[in-house]
Amino acid sequence: MTDRLGPAFLLVILLLPAFVAVQPPPGARAQSETQNEFVNVLPAGYFNATAIAVTAPSIVGYVTKGNVSLDTAFMDGQQVAAFSQTGDVTDSIFHQGGDGNYNALLAAPGTYYLVVYAPSAPANVTELYTVNANIDLRNSTTSVGELITIQPGGLFSIPLHVETLGSSSEVDILGASTEIVQYQVFDNTTGQAVFTSPEVTMTNFTVSPTVSAGYNLTLGRGLYILYIQD
Image: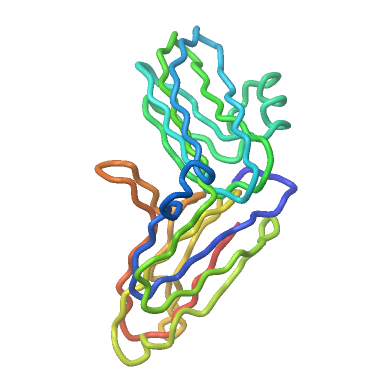
């Protein structure tokens, strides 16, 4: 992971079993969600930094699509200033490469930048971002939601439900963080990890064929702990 000084703020929701819809309640969409889409043409070696204003803790999602391979990054003001001098896209909150990139993350109030860089060839770029201040939790039989802070290099743990001591059960894990983290479900009865995620800011975020997020696991008999590593 990239070295940094600030902590990771993380929203974790455990659902047993359940599903989560990240959307504002009816009638509140205009106040709670913003969406912008635009097209840019970038010469080779140039970048575009689009400012994104976040006024309340929000889920920010974005998509970039180009006719050539692009570097896409989500940055704060200091990181953009450094990038303009060094060209190092890895010094960012999250970055990806390819002709199509997307991600989502939890953002505290502040100004952020969606940075798109054409490193080697001219690019026709379509960009889309959304800022959603509402997380609407629905249809959960048992749920635990928590906003936590993990210091750089720190490890957070939370015991999962004890129902798996007698029978198998399903668990959905939905997490969004301000920095890159990794999730692991560990079975204390066997001393083994049963699931380890890649390094992410949003759990299992996909946009095709539909927008979805979260890890769905079936757990056998055991005693489980969810670890989150910054």
